[in-house]
Image (cartoon, rainbow, N blue to C red; front, side, top):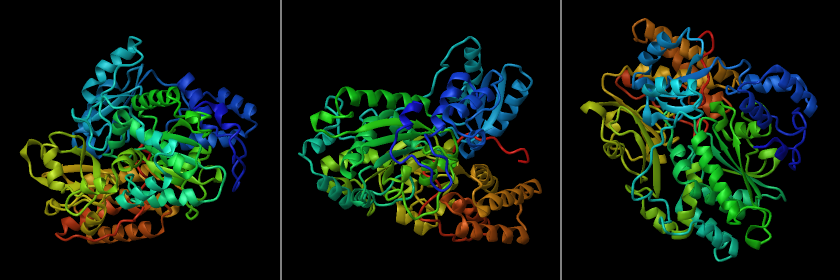
Length: 582
């Protein structure tokens, strides 16, 4: 987003010790895009130009992992080391790549967290262009030859289209939005259908969508905002990336309908910087909306103002948590706020803010056009609606699948071709890295909010990671914990210190043979309780849940640890290197 769009926004003011003025983050992103890094002289110039202290700028640069304070060595090769890639042999691949590229003058090799390409694990990026590890050499050579885009691997959905898309290939889009703007479809019609459909937030928290829209609608204020949380970055999670690539029209239509119903005039898609190809698709769709008169100062001659733009994240898993995301957009370090107040009442720049995930917004047009009963009829096993899942790990056909809500774990894995190489299933994470592991005895559990909670896990981010028999489950859980330790924003002591201590205990255990003695087991359980009960946000609350679930399975019994209703940040995994002591 251009920096000047943030200079006259209502509500930009000094609050709680924050600096007055526009967000510096788009300005820093623009400098890095132009220079490839953030030279100190540019930071000094920005400080003088914006009349902001240099230490404020340096505080932002040091917090967000995307910002570079040294020039790139040449070609930057980033290789994922999180769970799905780890299951597919990334450790050995990374060792081989270090042997190949360490000492090479024009190549910088870094190990990063999930870039959201789990369907092609082990995944890598070359100058932020995604691909498979096997493609690295070719991409590096292309960059050496001056090729600006060595390519991107993009997967596509079913030939017949996704079942949540109400529009055929020959049918004009945005019909529900047009009907809402013309008065043919009322605000109450949309709200009533959302409430009756039972649609809940698909980013992980599961808050009723109609109730959230109603809250923002009824909150007083002449200025309101809307945000689509597309900061999907939890290991194993990539369904929203697919929706952005193929259903940008539904995502933006649902978002604009939310703006009309709640009274918001300005909205942003907050997207992770690793999703460059998807961001390009979004920009093109926004231009299409503008050309059709569906966004602008006077939409379709109705006198209504609707504006859309994109805010590119400077990195950090914690930004998937809604208040940390807002702090980032306002130009601060992305640390979660204490709640209440919630964003629907006091959100972006202190104004009522509607925030939903990519999948949630994408489901709105079909519910509004076909009705709540149609939506509920799509579910099975007592559940309502449709659900997108990202399936990865030890499966034959990793990818994104849209199935009836309530589909069992077994049936979803069958759709994905079953466990790879004919092996038996050891365990599965049904809701992303923050969800507890479930054993094969839970294969017939329905994938839904309540049923998974009863089984001791959660639907979470809609990421199903399958783990085949013969895998070291404790090592897998330790891999997950390393991610949470690295991605803790550090604001609260229980999360910052607890995750570090727990990871050290587990690393020592694995190096000693992988058997937890009673003393270490008890200390881990104490840390889990403390973090779950006292951490400010979902990251710390769930970080040790997967480890505890594996510990219970090793003892032959489930250690039931309730997971918070509000999961770890919606989407949450940005490339951040391990600290020096890792």
